[in-house]
Length: 401
Image (cartoon, rainbow, N blue to C red):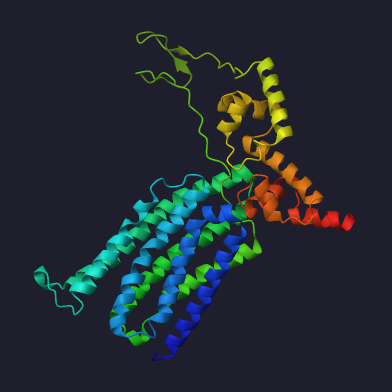
């Protein structure tokens, strides 16, 4: 340690590691199932913490041991962007089928750094045109991380927008809260990216003693912003409760000749004529709809299917004896609810009864027992359906008693 910047660097890094531990504890409090689903967020937080730990340790090691540190710590930087991308894929209901593909680059960097340490520790290996092997590997690593982060920022924008729409449709999440949460994560990743670029440029022109340590400050700032948002609005880390179902689009014949809007023709050589007014036909007749409604009432009384955390529109449709499209028709036209609202209302009704009957049971335990995959998802749905939080309902019942 040679100057005041080293002391500041260590202080900032230690604070950042403490924040990372705090965020992981919050994730753990969501329950075992939520903890497993949020594993990519935990990996994202862990990579930041490892970077900060490296900043502390490198102040106390020699240059030779520093090369070993590079072998273990440098590839971690290539995990940050894939981890947060896989997190959004997970919570939006479309997890990656081959997540290992996103970690090929970190493995490649690990092997390149390992080769440089074992074969060119003294920078003596020279390739064509007088370039040293270590310099070429270093240039490749820096170029690779800039390209990787740029690519994943573009991918993150698409998957986060899909997640934002999904939280509105399923749970009616507050748009401003979710928009701010997405802004913290995506904006924080871009902030770190810009800081890395600036730090790299500064390190080329300034000596080590005055080198900026803006990257670790950026990491800590992102962790603080995430902690603040969670503390201010705890209904975050919301995950999709059910797999996304897609309606089968009806096949429509496509004419080889384009027609004006509202015009059609019976045969290829016939003159165009106005299209007839479309006739809206119900997917079920009245008797079939009544039978489906009776079946849905029986399912509501039993509760087993609706409280199943893996329930989906297709699974409920099979239990009723309908197709997914027919089930949606019955729920929308005869019940007046979407699939998500129908399931959530049954779950919230059961949870409300348990909250009052078993006052010593934890809210997380109740949320998991009625089919929600996390405490935050349960709180959000409960507030949407009842206008109150589970804690407020339980507290009001205690005061009444």
